[in-house]
Image (cartoon, rainbow, N blue to C red; front, side, top):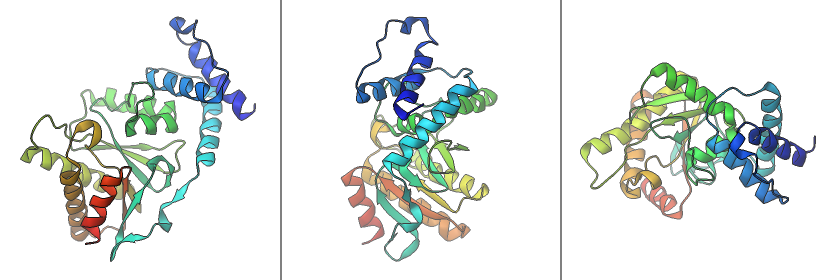
Length: 260
């Protein structure tokens, strides 16, 4: 199958899973097909899938990954004098790094909103549906929702990274409390400890709890930098930390904190 044929095959397989999808028309244009495929992956509940589907999906997603381009984290310049820390603005799903951090929700099964812009949705969309299947297995075994401040590790499947660290940050409903700050710091410590435990030599953090969870960007950045520096200074682990930012405001905040 060509790349375009793979996309149509995957759409047809997903549409065939649900009777209510029988009247959904597959768009003729590439963008329409891509959006439909991602939407179907986003809303798909964790349930068995054929090996043939996964084979075609993996080939398709890996081709998409290569066409987007992969950024080697080892080539990123350090942020200031500290060789252990870098700041990079870009798509975390394109980073070749041992582990990337996913800002997950407490269900820890990914985002079910079609085409949502959150990092959880993007990571699951580009990793593949086996990520949701594994997360579902992990959470069913746990038997309760993931508390804020902790972390779980999974393979990254079709991403250029080796692992994904899933952590749930605090949700801010009003003023930021001391508990909120402690939970956010715990997210960074938990991810770092789990990464080191699994032999990771590099880790890329997203801006945990900002955006959809409404943690003020400036406070979140300061907590992230202080917590990471404290962990690195105390534990002295052989790991490099990349603060991955998407917004210009976050880039300025991290640069000011790390390169005053």
